[in-house]
Structure formats: structure tokens, C-alpha cells
Amino acid sequence: MSARVTWLGHSTVGIELDGTVLVTDPVLRRRIAHLRRDVAATAPSRPDAVLVSHLHYDHLDVPSLKRIGRDVRMIVPRGARRYLRGLTNVEEVEPGSTVDVGRLRVDVVEAVHDGRRWPVGKAVPALGFVLRGSRSIYFAGDTDLFDGMAALAPLDVALVPVAGWGPKVGPGHMDPRGAAEALTLLRPSIAVPIHWGTYGIVLRGVRGDRTPAEQFAREAAEVAPGVDVRILAEGSSLDLDG
Image (cartoon, rainbow, N blue to C red; front, top):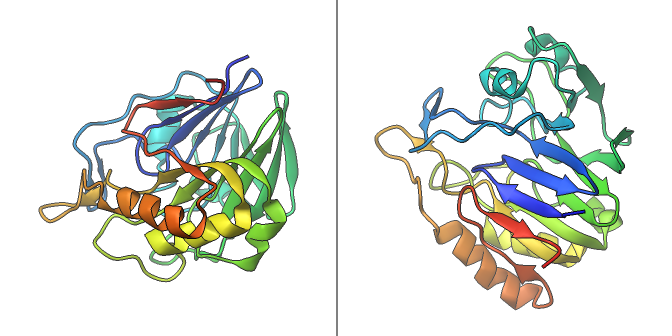
């Protein structure tokens, strides 16, 4: 069976592993609130489940979820169901939960990030996910660096956010250096930078800027030289079998 990760832009990643297909934080539209991308992403075809890390608009986009399928299994943070009207297969989880999807075990882990729906949403936990089957794949969502990452190691693949949708990142995020330091805790064989270069603020965004990903690769070579960093173009895949 194939093992593959496909980066669809921002934090949207299609993962194929052991005959199971998952999609993370699907945000597919060209424009989300004040953010814009150049080309809309193609909706993945009927995945076994969708993993949603938190409720920010650039990670939870209900129209994108409906494009994937109103009855597709949605695994979301506890407290998120109220925002998912019209979706019929919603499962709430929290850090420490474990769910089975196809042949995979999905461990729900913490993320250091304010994951509420702004501007007035109630506090809802932000999540990361570790997929465990013939390989282990970590999707960090949005998070700051935290010591508990070491408990997830070792990993085959780490999908790590390295930037934001503007020129700077605030609390609860990792910049390229922080993401590289995370590799020293996670100890993956392969790291794929995500959350960079896709969306930008209308009229003054940073769409297409490869600088964060390339800086992450340089920083990783310094602090975690044993990790194979793979920078993917939007829509391209990394075949883990080859």
C-alpha cells in the first residue's frame, strides 16, 4: 500500500497510509475573510476522515468541509460542534484521546495555541495529531514549541508549521528557528514545512514567498542535521515508499 503526503497549501495536507486517507485542516477557497490565495485547492475525494486542529478561520472553513462531504467523518476539538452546522458526522476529541480511522490509530495531542473562534468564541483546545500505522506521522496544527513534543518521538514524518500568513508570527506559533528546534524534540526522519506561502493579506500579502520554508531548512541543517527536510510545492506529494 502506498504511503504519501500531499501538501495542498497552508495547513491542508492529504495523507495516505495503510489504505487510509485523511485530510488535515482543509481550507480550499481562494479567499478566507481578509486572506487570499492565488488558486483554489481541489477538494480531496471522500477521505476516511478529516482532522481539524482548531477553530481559527484559516484552519476551520465550513464551506471547504462541505465541499469534501457533509457526511464525511470530521474529528474536531471538543466544543467545535456548534460551528459545524450542516455536517452530519462530527466527532469531538481532546488531548489524550485516541481514535481509530481505518487501519490507523490517531493519537490526539496538545498544541500550545489559542484555538478559539474569534472574536468572541469560547475557549476550545487546539490539537495536534499523531497517525500511527506502518509509519508515524505528526501533524502539529498551529503550536508554539513545547517540551511535551519529546514524548511523541521518534517519528517517521513531522508536518510542522514554520510561518503564518503575514510577515511575523505571534505567540502560539513557531517561526523557522522554533520549528527547527522542535525537530530536536520530535526526532523525525523527515520534516515537511507547512503553514507558509499560501495565504496573504489582501493587497499586501506574502503569497508564494518560499523564504520561511528555506530558512527552516537552513536552521534544521544546523540544529537537527539528521532530519531530511522536504519542501513541497502546493499540490505536490512526497512518496514515503520511494
